Amino acid sequence: MSRQLAQKPTSSRYRVLDTIRRHPNISRVELASLTDFSRAAVTGITQGLLDASLIVETPLADGKEGGRGRPRKMLDINAEAGYVLGIKLSLHQMSFSVTDFTGNVVHTMHLPFRGNQNCDVTLDIIEMGIQRCLKNADIKREKILGVCIGIPGYVSHETGMCHWSPIFTERDIPVARLLQERLGLKIFIENDANLVTLAEHWFGEGRGLSCFAVVTVEHGIGMGLVVDDDLYRGANGIGPELGHSKVEIDGRLCRCGQLGCVEAYASDYAILREADVEFSIDAYNENPKAYHETISKITERARNNDEHLSAVFKNAGKRLGQAVANMIAILNPQTVIFTGDGMRAGEILITPAIEEARRLKLSGDKNETEFITHIWGDEVWARGAAALTLQHIYAEPDEKQNFSSSKITGSTKLKPTKRA
Image (cartoon, one colour):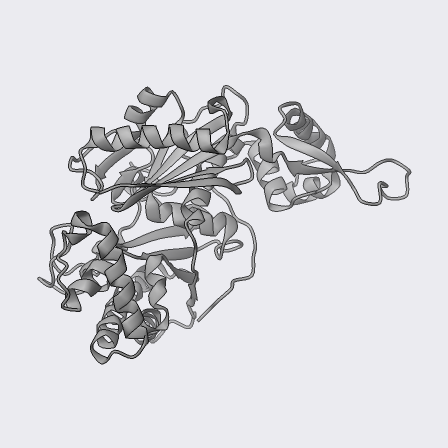
């Protein structure tokens, strides 16, 4: 039987490291309380982490603890313990970011790239980009703890296989193994929407939420799902694909080759097609720069009350809302987070999506799903890559750790920024 939920790491060191990450400058007494470990156990675990230079001691401002006259030492993650390299593959560029041991971005670089390439060509560019990125960041290769690559399409984190992606001309590519053989580094791959979801869970609007969905709107429509504080990956490590759920039988052609997918109505390329501009489904590959310039111009005209274009975005939003309503009826997440480049459209796309999702709500459902729009920069992919990789590292932080585990988790709290 295939596992459907990645189980949480049970390592005591994981729990301690993750708690310190979520509560910087924490005392051992507080750490014991939050982890339900004894003070003696916390002392032993933290000493091992200190010896490995994964955490550091910092003095409390008043220098005292409880009036006993003893210097009080607080604990924090050692940001310089190691670095993670995150890579996002898009149809128009590759983005490379280095994050430290806490997940903060320290360097970012972009390379021009045209998708739908041969696998070897793409891997050559990735290898060259990694070398250049590390050189520009002035970080030695041996300080890199892992590399995580976000890929659009059907991707299995557990096996390291990319079964289909608009990035590659081939199918069923063992991307993780091929890159690990080239680079000698630990390689993880993940669906790009899942990386956004992990970033939301560790650093964004999903902090403190145990059950939520992330819907990404851009050239395609993606989705990530967290259930019981775990990223849901479905059978064989492949998560949900909201973009290819059907909103009309035998409807419009989707880039996946099927008909009636919500992506064929609500994505950037679908909006361009409906706006009667000269771009086809394949135009993204032919001239990605002009493609992005065109969608930006069309969006601006729609926001300035162009009647035809405003209607195009409204209809796209309603179709998106239909798919989201179906997802809510099946999964009942407490929150749905909309993000991605498509958020440039703002209310002309998202408002009709939310209105339609609420209109189609089951009449007997008394739970009110919360909708959030969250505009990220490019750092979201890097931070998601860092979150995925660091969860592996936190679970077994010594030099002989097993990187093949697919167990992940992460949850903290933060007040949302914009809710509907």
